[in-house]
Length: 176
Image 1: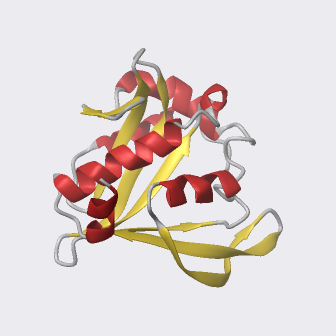
Image 2: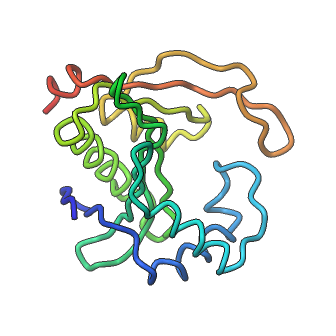
């Protein structure tokens, strides 16, 4: 387990499937994720099993409250040991915990782990600029806007821009 100030990051458990299945079949929790087809519990379980296995190129962890309440997932993908970089992503599925600073703490916690334990140098992401909460969360953790991909995603019936954000270890260390 990796402890943050408000949340802990832990391995994915079989018990997480029920909550995850309900989240990924909920239109509101998937608003920023793009096209999502209905997913059966066995499909959700297979995805969690795959993501939960140890791999050199990805790390997926469950986000828990101190009460051992599973509220979402966070991860690093495309981990490159040569360039010491990875793409960060987060999915808070438990809507009753939105807008409480828990995602911000989860992002801070995985960044700390990535820089201090995994020895990464750069963490980056792509985000819809209209997802104001996510953009603010990343900015509060030190991520900087690095550019915009015009029409980077097709979502909700139209092409949408994508903002690119990044954080490098020296900038992180200045904040720590």
